[in-house]
Length: 300
Image (cartoon, rainbow, N blue to C red; front, side, top):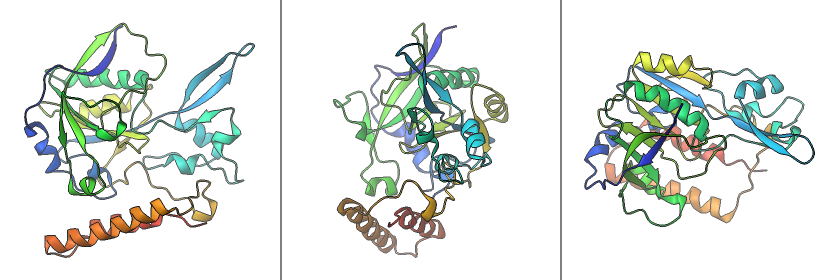
């Protein structure tokens, strides 16, 4: 069976009309609605698998995908719709999954690997009328040569103040006989959707989850696919799961550097300016996001 790909077309967008409807519906809080527009019948969260290298004969080593349920069984912590991988990877005795297994790697952030992505596309094509009418937004910070087949877009005010811009591109879902056994690290889109908006997908560059919104039938297909480790999602779920590990138990403690202090101060200033120029009190959602941002920094 041919493998499915999402690739750029030679058509250069001339306006942001195709994405304006998205930016009007996104609400920048610490929930799924920050990355998924409302209005779809159902939503799903697809977990990006972790990876483990397995020794073979002699010096041969192969890398295999490890579902979150395997890490959950190892740590003894339950896996549910709002789990966070950082919690599952830490066992009660202090052992860390990536250090307890030979050359293990955490899930890919910001993208599904090509094999699983192809499985997802197989479901999306069943409800997509025009396979060459797909839109995508890709973060400009991946680097590499500038792409002239797209236009820069500032999705929301919050991403704009953090310096994030995205390139709007016209894409298509195509099939080929290319081998997708190993993940490729090309620049993945953070948002993609068909022109008729029958479904919508997103994956933050720092997230280990991909979210899909669409019809009940589409989401049921995704949830029932054994190749996709997926859970039902709600717009008010914490995006990419909630990290409940105590700071004293967190194996990923971060020391405060000058760069982190600069980013924190920049956030405080932008928060005050946004509230001032809007001439209204900041919403509870903005206050909650500020609280989450400040709690993310853990002093040793």
